[in-house]
Length: 398
View (cartoon, rainbow, N blue to C red):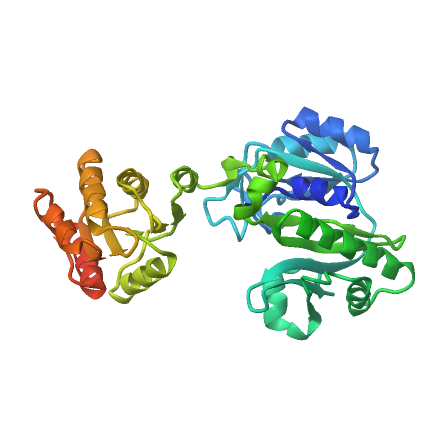
């Protein structure tokens, strides 16, 4: 689960991470009130959407104007810019051309920026450890730094038993070229950030940029946090921060039915049981010249009702011109899947080609149910046959 910048800063501040003062606003008047409380003389008006690159982004209502992060010097300017941002669509390199509507702003005090650095923590799958990443190239995407200047990134894998120690934090400070009181401030910052990461079951905490002020303070000028969805039951307060307006409505609906769904850009819907099988299915669709419209894993214990819900979600995507059902019946029985497919096809008045490949427990019974359904369902003998048939059917129907 992802949250907004202002929410991440509020959480981090509870653990002692230094952040600038600020407040959230949903209207221009609220933005002005927050600014009055900050007292100036410089204010930053920040669009709050779940996407990076906001400062370099552009609003569809004013593509040649200012971006989604603006520095101003009066309360009146805060209100004027808030009015120009709220309710308008911001397009960044991470939103895609459709952009996202700005529904809330974060009004923050200005900072005397001397240096911009990068600091992040994440779960490294290779080492299965929390890994600290630091770089002197603050303000840049860490992927770009890794590609162009990998030598400028420090990586520290933290032993889960001992945890992050002061010597780790000092190493970060020295790698960033800090000196004097900046070192102590950085050590305190890194230790607090790690405490928040562990306590909140985060998957990513990214501070970009991490700022050194003219007074030598170390503060988080921006903050991004993602959380392990499987641990949210332990953090009701974090779960309540979820903003469904920033998520795909089909993915939200899938979550209600315990389905793993991710919308993609193609036109062939995929319904599969198992993440590995889903990846293989998408790969072979591309191999035969098609483009998958989604990743949808119904899981190992899918019911007839869940399969029906999955069909409805796939067909709710107007780009879908055909569906491939690829099921291996291990725990899941093929006859249950077949019954779900038939029920769903009838309920939603299926109007696109449907190819079904079944294998495993009760496969013959499953195929019989499909054959006797009276529906125009194409049966496939194997995965390659299924992919070839669905790609061909979609092209013919187009």
